[in-house]
Image 1 (tube, rainbow, N blue to C red):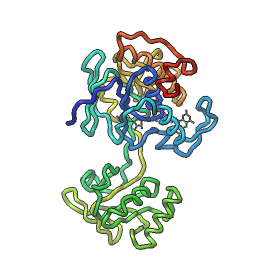
Image 2 (cartoon, rainbow, N blue to C red; image 1 turned 180 degrees about the horizontal axis):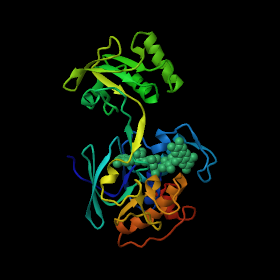
Image 3 (cartoon, helix red, strand yellow; image 1 turned 90 degrees about the vertical axis):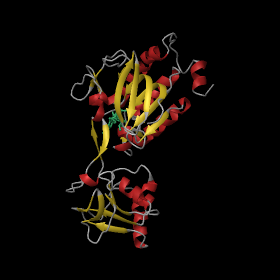
Image 4 (spheres, rainbow, N blue to C red; image 1 turned 60 degrees about the vertical axis):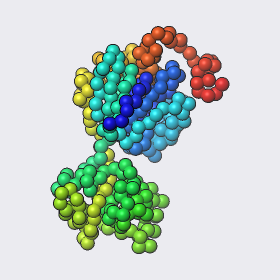
Length: 335
Ligand SMILES: Cc1cc2nc3c(=O)[nH]c(=O)nc-3n(C[C@H](O)[C@H](O)[C@H](O)COP(=O)(O)OP(=O)(O)OC[C@H]3O[C@@H](n4cnc5c(N)ncnc54)[C@H](O)[C@@H]3O)c2cc1C
């Protein structure tokens, strides 16, 4: 297990609300680390509707999900947040008043004065393909994510799916795999046309195989795959990309009072029943709650004011505007 990482605030979730929380905390000199299961920031905006337009962000008549994530990243850059992507927060323990110990599934441990749960609809988890007997192979020769490309070097790889993830990983892994086969149920792909063209060019050049059909069975033993029921296919590693689904996940085990899988909070600071533990964005509930990005932004601003008391118990907080405060402008790097 790694050394404990000490921070002012740990944010669970790097969706739009977790990202904006970095900004509001940063203005108050509060440093943040963020953890997200996804390998990218932006939460639902980045994962579920990157190309779709959002029309109700105040002052921005039109922006795509991807565009909003990018803009938020630019806005929080001056505050240098530390991201831990591709990791799930699994445990949260109260060890002081307030002080928390938080751990991830990859063995990182944080000690933090406050925790902000910005976990949205919960953790994004891969959809399991409908293949009988797939479970014994999972995490030994069937993987739902690529954490280290090199783990797939010189393997006979089978990638299953027709979306961007399947195509992107086909293009990235083809050069290092012993042989790569892409399987999709029909000869039409949902992924970006440019990726589809590149994949077809590799097939035409004989550098990879494309099979139209479905994987219905697996062969092997002791978790090691040797073949699958796509005709004539010897395979030792399979990567199914069937999209992601949202599940509440470990948040439910952190000893918090929950209502319909949501965390009740007060509306003065969006704090939970535990001092120093906040919940903002889609994961919280209170009378009149609207699951909108703009509501989460407001919640982040109020949360930061209260978190300041825990991080700097002896400092008085003076309210300031970014338009007129040279102090804030210096922090933003514009004065
Ligand atoms: C199709 C669609 C269209 C939408 N259109 C609009 C719109 O036009 N306007 C609008 O205001 N809203 C819209 N929304 C809603 C908006 O996307 C959400 O309100 C917003 O994403 C909530 O942000 P969030 O940061 O709270 O949560 P999310 O965006 O859900 O992000 C939460 C993040 O937390 C991570 N996470 C969860 N649990 C853990 C854990 N244990 N460890 C590590 N990471 C964890 C997740 O992986 C995720 O990345 C739309 C939603 C959808 C699905």
